[in-house]
Amino acid sequence: MMDFDDVNCKEVNIEPLRKSLLRDDWDGLSFNTSPYYYDIWGLSIHPYYFSYNHFNDSYNYSIKIKDYIMNILTSLKPGQLLPCTSSFNGFSIYRTNKFLNTYYDGRVRNDLFTKKQIETHA
Image 1 (tube, rainbow, N blue to C red):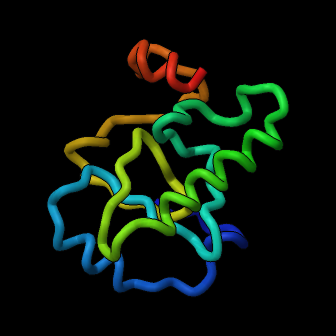
Image 2: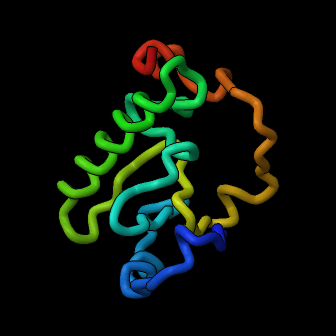
């Protein structure tokens, strides 16, 4: 899946994709754009499980999440994957056995998160 917009259709470094295809320790991969991770709307990662759009002061909340994810991404070792519940960020690949017949319907699905995840986000 690729989001063909002016944010993602830039120079593509194919080497991380090649290396990732040789691995079997992932169900889906989302590749970061440069210079920063822009698609926080589709990101669900501890402790931020819900979109920033679901909160008052969403602009400041979005900045907080961007800073959080960039701090994590810049501290990863080469080749290290970052586990998350959901991400897209413009270019992603998925193992079909995990994602076949899935869809997005726009609803907030609290039933997909544990009580602890919801409490942590709150």
